[in-house]
Length: 129
Image 1 (cartoon, helix red, strand yellow):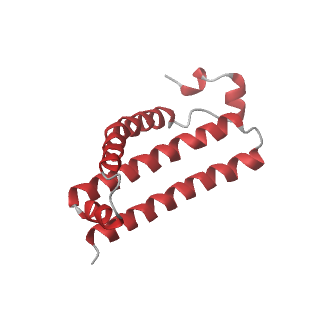
Image 2 (cartoon, rainbow, N blue to C red; image 1 turned 135 degrees about the vertical axis):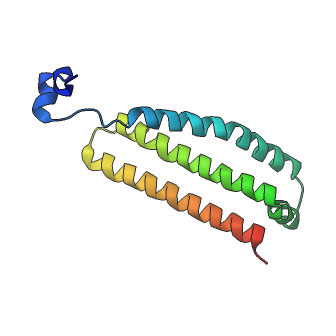
């Protein structure tokens, strides 16, 4: 079927149409949300179990390979979920393109920087010295 016939006259004139990313974005938001449920519960339970422990106990806990892997997975899921969700909020509620585009770019850069720093710190603690 001809794609041009399915568009409105204004859509045909502008040449605009679906970017074909909506479904993937929606699914990735749901997948990261579902992944965050057990990871967040694990992290919260671990922090509660470590309450009253000193710095060395926390470092010893994070040096366990399984814990380090779960921490990296938590960081990836958390910041990917954030990088997917916050720009949508900005796109929906910020109406000025002059503010919207730099804000979305800043959100993505900050999320990327935070996940890189978090993973680097976790790997350095877990597998360093």
